[in-house]
Length: 137
Image (cartoon, rainbow, N blue to C red):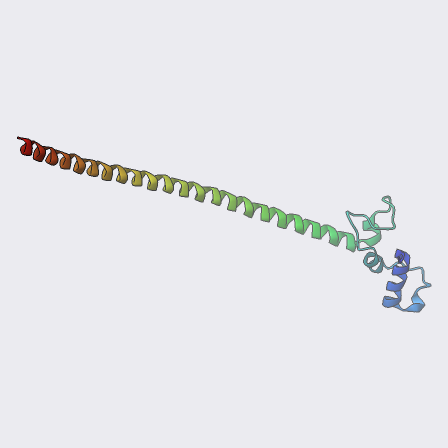
């Protein structure tokens, strides 16, 4: 496993060349690259007392800006979800109401048809009864 310091040396060699390795200059970009950048305001290899923003400045603030952007996007997405949920609830309510009305109309129509059929059956029974009485009569 390659140590972070070794990765840092390799990154410096790639960026600055071999002759820059002996200079005591700290390259924040190279360090951030080999340590996968700041995480929650902290940078690998530095104590919490050493503020990452003082050491890596723009890298941390860029990460914070990204977090703010993500939070804003999450908030906007949550608002969209809330609106869609509200809309879905309203549509479901309308559908239920339409269903109830349709079913009520169908039941009313079925009752009407049943009454007509019952009346026809009663009429037919009266006719048959009259015929039967005539035949017996």
